[in-house]
Length: 210
Image 1 (cartoon, one colour):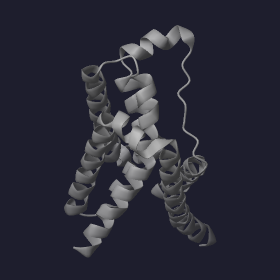
Image 2 (cartoon, rainbow, N blue to C red):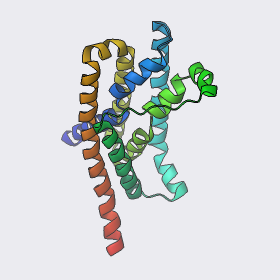
Image 3 (cartoon, rainbow, N blue to C red):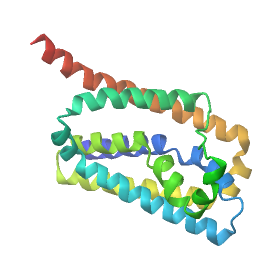
């Protein structure tokens, strides 16, 4: 039971810091500034549903991708660690990732911003995808797999609530509060990155030495 709880806690912490709904919130507010409350709510709902389905698909198809491309989970851990570390560094410096949209593409993005870029790649980004694949590989029992899916669902639900309440939360926390929260989450991401990197590097080095 303790092992399952520890796994669930790791999954929740890593997904929350990597998806970073508080960091996505100001960008969401900017992109939906021209929408009314109902449209903004529908946009947040669709974005979180699409992101949830995408992460689950990657989590369960990860092994197939490994077999097809001949990728080892250890290599993915090393690469994932590097990705997480870079993301954590940006978060530690409170730099929000800005979505670059050309003037000619503005209308296209506005028509369905809930899918792109909100759901993918802002919510369901490379960090969340890599994390889902790696954690599913670590889930060596049905209980852990159920916990992982439940955690992902819970994170998506929490993300929806945060985006739904975006205007109130931003006013409550203020810009300084958002930056402090992002720095704290960035630090956690960097710690997770180091763990991922060395847990993947160690077996590779041992295999080379053999």
